[in-house]
Length: 156
Image 1 (tube, rainbow, N blue to C red):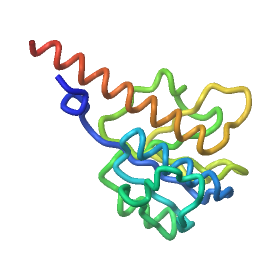
Image 2 (image 1 turned 45 degrees about the vertical axis):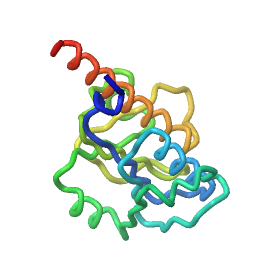
Image 3 (image 1 turned 120 degrees about the horizontal axis):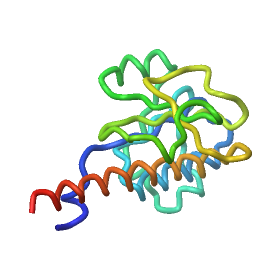
């Protein structure tokens, strides 16, 4: 059975007021690679950057939201998972929902907002935004794919 038929659900990545523009291209590229449904920018617009080497912005929706209120009103029916340093459930212990929007904040501050739940990466120091987003996307994709494969085996 192909991986595409086993994997269920979707996820999106949202960046809340990111500071370093070069990280945006890296996040968009990783979102494309890991199969994100979209990338959302809250409080900042996206412009193509050289760090988006796959030109992912051509095939991946990049949504813009003026502020947190507009974002949460628009995405009210979906689980919002905030990703912070040392706050919430450790990523390796987190049960990823089949549908989720992961929100990461700017590199120079903590998120001033909360979602439906929070996760953190168990690291000594904060990671680069693009690196952190990539790890979260990999964890989500891997866990959902493994769950789908397990369900497929049960049906045999």
